Image 1 (cartoon, one colour):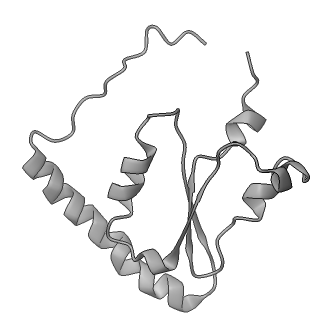
Image 2: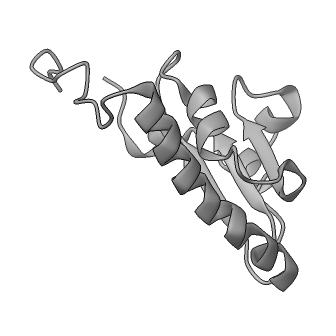
Length: 121
């Protein structure tokens, strides 16, 4: 795939940092209000996957998007080079073993599903 014709910078959605912070507060309120009933129901789990190349801003995006959510109800997993234990299992074992418990929010800071779905060139 030739990426040279793709833009490297998106159009800004806010005119100022003040507007950005106002929008962020409004958007953070929604997940925050839903987290307590989600945890109390103990029925389903929520998995959020942040995928991107190195230095793409995944950590900052997680910090902003999840800023209104209580960390006590979250489990964050970062997938880097596999450990010796992970190498002893099948390819998707480490993500399966890291899935969030019911009532909790799981955050994957990168998954390696693109290695399964996208062929290497």
